[in-house]
Image 1 (tube, rainbow, N blue to C red):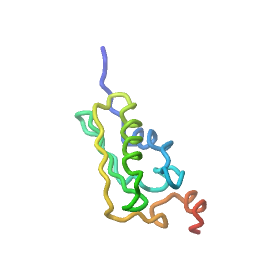
Image 2: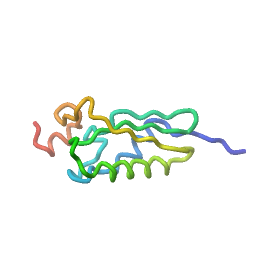
Image 3: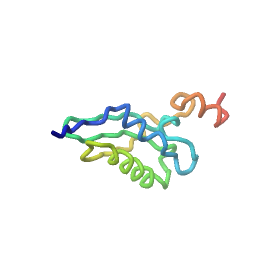
Length: 106
């Protein structure tokens, strides 16, 4: 008997933790670039992200890394990554304390 277990939103976030912003070289989760994760019952995962700037030329690279990481999770059939700039990314309020220290925002 096989069970089709879907990952939790926490498991999706954990899979995204190793991914780094291609320009800053810091983790996208700790930077606060992941705005939302939803795991639907149809094995679809929706990830809402932002970029450090709207002019970031490496957005497609980041999207591909996110798609690959989430698709590697058991039970996931598809991933939809949506980029938004609302609200604009602000490391002072969205980044982890460790990242704020690394960026000199204290």
